[in-house]
Image 1 (tube, protein in one colour):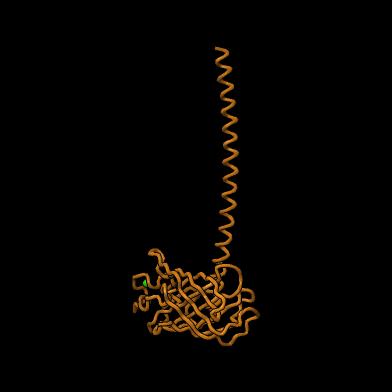
Image 2 (cartoon, helix red, strand yellow):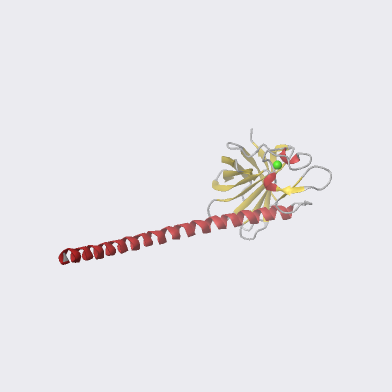
Length: 220
Ligand SMILES: [Ca+2]
């Protein structure tokens, strides 16, 4: 019995040791995982920050009686609603103007092109002709006020770069930033009555200033 008890104790001790090794191993894996998650969160956070800065820039460039992230209803009196309520399928403006013009001109397969003007960008952006190809568009039911975009921007048909961004139904604008690295963000604002043209502004991600413009036309 004493012998059996001793074997039992020994096997418990072994099991403890094995468990501890497994725990250490899991702990290590958990740390690796945390590290990966932290890195991803940082990238995502940075992207969101860039996106919000670009949006803030859009707002500061346009005169609106409504606040940032607000949509100006078309009725005569100033009536502002949050832009996430635009094109969500329910009337929030008294006149229902938040549910008008809800087609996305930047649909997958759409190509816009145009020549730039007012170019005073510091470097690296001396293209004359700009091509914007919308590669993919996704709109989620639980967040219908924007469509997520994957876009290819080509300069003078020589170089091209992938961009990510959104079409905002509230702002009637495409807001794009480069998928990798620095360079230029782009905001292209559509006229609510004419979805075949947009006024593009290129914003240096270094100086945060608009340094070139273009009128982009939908290629048909
Ligand atoms: Ca609405």
